[in-house]
Length: 223
Image 1 (tube, rainbow, N blue to C red):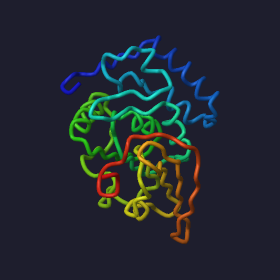
Image 2 (cartoon, rainbow, N blue to C red):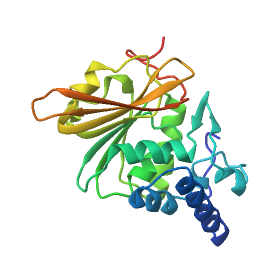
Image 3 (cartoon, rainbow, N blue to C red):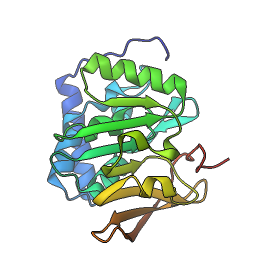
């Protein structure tokens, strides 16, 4: 895929498939109208491999994007985004840019968005796509498990890869009232955590459903 220019034509057929996807996400328990509207606005076919059929692009499953990575299942994207509870003006950090699809969904809110990717090929490919789409997203190449301390604090941090434990560095980059959403567990199966930094600078933890993410890499990821 590297060097290929993505097709960014959004047809009525694509939009119809997105409506079907939204119906499926609603049936699976996604209740936030803001999240559903954001996903309906984002053309997922822009972010999948160029030869993917429209039907596969909007099916509710993950797809390989190369470099041993995937574009997450739309339900997973919706679930994590709903847990973030985004507010207008939030400063948000995404760990694991990958295809850029999750970032594109977050970008539908009026926020300041930062995202970091460890893999150089994915970073370059997605940076070019963001430029092509005129997305004003701050994208960085580096170890996402360390966060972006230079740009902290963040109101929301979203991790899109499975971690063996919660990286301390990320907790300390949350603003008061900030939330970290991260899958934590074994390399192939994780539980979704939401950690909120309360007004006393302590951390309240909630644990949700099981998911399966690619492993988080880096200093605080899987070796």
